[in-house]
Image (cartoon, helix red, strand yellow):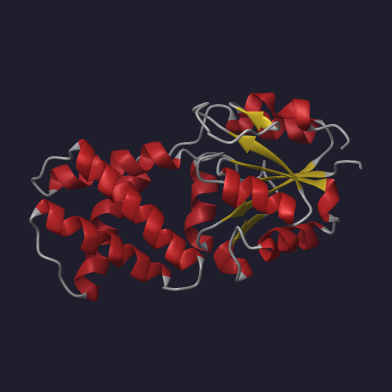
Length: 231
């Protein structure tokens, strides 16, 4: 089947969320007069994954998943846990500002998008996040105007790995799933879920340490062009 479009995940694929998240955490913790240890970093990343998943699955609001992350972390810093308003202010004025200052794209992101477009293929982004923040990330890393539409879980009302998220982006593009390739760094949420919805998929394993035995695997987006042929 002819390939007509490539849809990218954002965080961990085009946008370097892991580096920005840790940099933001370290800056914020230092501003609180505390030391950011490896154990603290691991606890923060685990809390982010667990509570973001709860939002993704529709169990809590986006603001609540942020509060829950702080409720997990603040006791580890020997700091008081305030009410919802105090937690919202602390997240926004503390971690979020530091995180945003560390935003950056991967070096292979723009070249890969240009290569896809040069191959005559359309592009889009499908990301689990909010409209405002995810669009701001695309702009911050210089991909606005280079990429096609940015579709978010918030805007669609459904998040990956639900098949409805993948089908929605195909409907937005006006293409059948079999003519769309999805590229993401999470093997279960991005790759397996995209295939279950009928799309083609490539796993971006940047560290080269994924446990899955995935045939369609790349460690850099610069190798994506090898997967742009017909199925």
